[in-house]
Length: 257
Length: 257
Image (cartoon, rainbow over all chains, first blue to last red; front, side, top):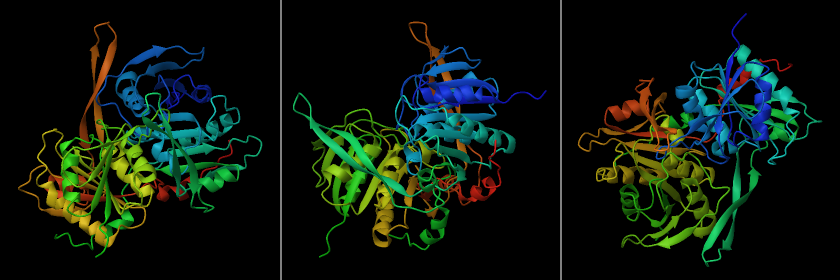
């Protein structure tokens, strides 16, 4: 019998979040599961790593599943680094991150701790997938995500992923209307922040970051289009940020000052 | 007389770091300068943003230059968001970030607070450049960076940048041997972490993240090659992470479970 795949599970909402509990639950039906996840929520951490501070990792038991679990004081990217170098005794066959409580579609991939963990695994040449549900609430219903997660995961384990490519999967909230799975490109969008300015009891001004998400790009090949039309969006992402198309243009500049 | 360009300056080492002081000094010879930078070092923060906490911004005077300066409790990406929405009364003509104490070449762009600030400005369609010096020390000598920074900045102000492209500029440490400025692609490289495991006075294990930088890619068109050969490297970077080349391949998958 072939060895079961070794699957590393992490997230950015913290090891007790319902989203990661669902993900662990699905993964234990597919392989041997080791969880190394943050001990507290890390949303919006982008690809932060812990350089100037100490990291703690503690073995924990959270439910009666067959997985091994470790709670870590660091960021999602730290969790993956620690898992690979210190916790696991062999390179995992797959790393999955999430299921995030909230969208990581379009530009949100840049701010996403969920996706930074997946990217970190990708940099280490481990096939990796980030999963997110379009529901920010802690009590979000992840039930309809299970079959989606299983289908995509099995495809990745069977086919592998192209070199240096990681999948960013977003799942619509409405479980009754999912039309299928669509491979997409990242839509051009951004956040129009509104800072909510307040004054603290000591008379000092402070701000809360709030904002409105603005999609400038309505292409039918985008993740935003797919999600709006109740498809699961799958965007292949890469960590080579080079804008290759711009190199020739910039070479026409004269750099003599 | 044409209006002077409005230049937003930020960094991730904190507003008092020698690197940003040098950058401000150069920028005041080119335009009207407003500084919004972190009140403390934020290295390794990636593209973190502050969602669950309050943000403070305070007007400060650090030297006798003509610039206006604001110190902010947030991350580099927060600084840019706050600058655009709350501090500046018009959209800046340019955003420069740095000069970072240490390299942001190749995969380091992913972990870089310096580059996340520049990317954030790019997302807001502001021409943006991140500058880094290959010297991690606080007492690094930035003198030879001045002419490089000025040349590249003037080129960007004169030519503009291609849509959704940001420049990642790294400057060699050795000031006597700089051979010129090279447009490059990001080298494929990664960090092989070694976690330094210790035990705290209470008997609990903890880790420090350390590691060795490993370059797998010795192409003469890479930033690592340029820097090794004492060129300034300029990599055009983008925030569309889509691996466009992988879309067709993934479309061959059958997603029926």
